[in-house]
Image (cartoon, rainbow, N blue to C red):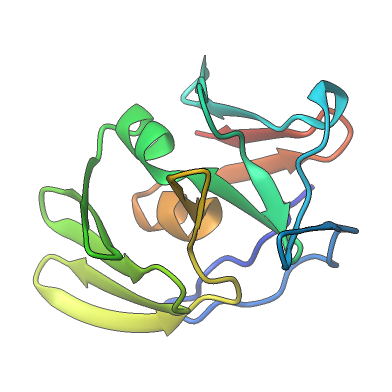
Length: 154
């Protein structure tokens, strides 16, 4: 199964690959993060990522993860400055802005932009980003098991 979010194509534009997931409304936004039975588990290269203070959520049918925990599990550097999030490793860098659907990619000096269908948000003091757009840009394959609610990045 595909993870419930949209992968980017070669231009950085995101394409729909799955139907929206039912959601619950919290604080004016659509987010689903109910109990332990509904918890989303995330694995990077076979290692489970531990989220100490903010669990992954599904918002508008897209899986959002705390950026620092997942990015650092992928051995990426994360910088946050006044609502601008930059994730990088060597020759690749992506930049996202909290509350904006624009994403910028730099790959070996070549820059492109795209549009996310879910903007990055801050929940409980943690920056939440759509995982597929990040992981695939850095060469990871992403899978979603809806039955077990497990995201695998390999």
